[in-house]
View: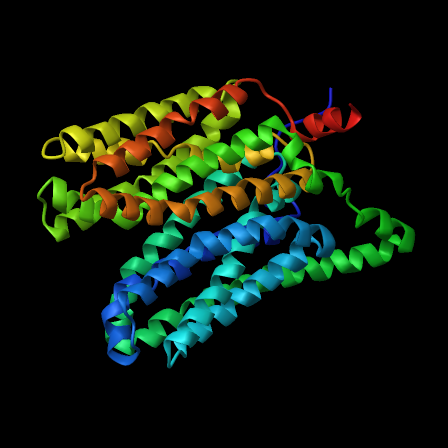
Length: 414
């Protein structure tokens, strides 16, 4: 019987390992670097609430556009070259933000940085599939955990660095991390190029011509739609709460702004332990709908608690809402577990995250508009409850294990 045990992580792929982990460390730095130093930026650049809101809304919009086009670009140019371009965009974006002398330059730098990050979001699952098909759960755990860290560290370092060296240095310093990430991928691409040259022109042509139907027919897969729905519903809720939870708690629970910020930190921080645990659980259970139903239950408990009893057990309600996001790392894991090929993984990643982040962009806006229209927080919270309960539909679609390539082939054969 052949040996099917996993290979050591460093077995001929150590550079890819370091490259994936370094890339994950870059994927939230630009998102979290501005808000802690807004006061310092305003001292040099006119930055009103609307302007800051536009920059705050850029991440989900940029991530959605990257999701819709990233897989197609990956098919055309290759995963590694496109990742190299994404890293270059991040380096340029960080430097542009750090050199900004006007709001327009700050906005342009943010657009460039978020475009690179969005492409990186899409490419990491298929890169894990390509280099670590025997370690999908472990590698997903590692890179999702580092993504969570990449959002927390800038929030901690931005203000101290700005105080010591200025806000421009605080924003630009993340270009160093991005530049370092170029190194392993440059070596990987160089080695791959030499290897393909050794294969000869016919072999190179066969090696670099992936099928396009996995990229053009994702909508034919029930599993693809189920994952996109789960990711969309969760993204909508998370971005809404990140934007409005502190104000909601100040108004309904009577806590101070400082305490409200602490509850938001608790909500966000719960993503790290979930990233460590959930991919391994997902890879071991046959029916992943159990986790979706668990997430729905926790989310509803958290939202109902915030609606009916915000003045008591506040830690419990916020924790339930935070733990209810367990399917974020779950979906990223399933992108690889529900595809057979790297091509399919890239296509599913783009489809799922493209739709998901497009829906996420509406979260903060709709939540705020509902509050302004009603003068309270009841209807916004009811909307989140409805979004959580809507997860029952994709949960039922995920009860049976299926591969998107098989579903697409079956659909095309009809």
